[in-house]
Image (cartoon, rainbow, N blue to C red; front, side, top):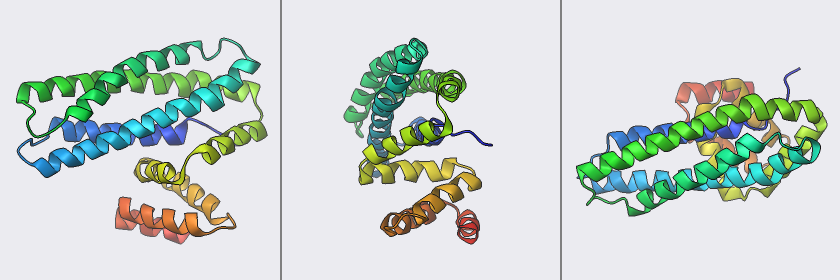
Length: 215
């Protein structure tokens, strides 16, 4: 049986948006103001998701795991502090981003972001390999599902939409089908219909058609 993995979906979404941001930052044409503003908007979305995810991990995952096995989240928690420091610098870079940025400043920003991305990716690997193993050791599937449900219930609808926007392109067809089926099973179909429209807008036509035929 496939175990519940609390980190996989959000980490895939974060890797997707960070990868997209790095790509667009590296090729940014600062003479095109609209392109600069679009990148800035993407950066603000990324910061929101990074902050939301960190808070959810601390409040719903690390705290619960520490109660069962003290010390098991020490490395990941220390990494959170390191990431927070780096993220503050990236946050300021994004806030300051406009079409007046020089080529030298842009390159420094790019290198700073690549450093941040590298540290963050290593952190997600630590969580998915070590922390996830501890979760499966100390919690049964029902308990893990309860943690997941509590996390989902704590996310505002607008933020959840943003998560889905970057999650769909990063997941396997099977993962996306399971996500949509879970929403489809809810009494209120509004969230399902809205999320289905979102999936159509962010996925290739052939991929979305495949999902529709398997829901």
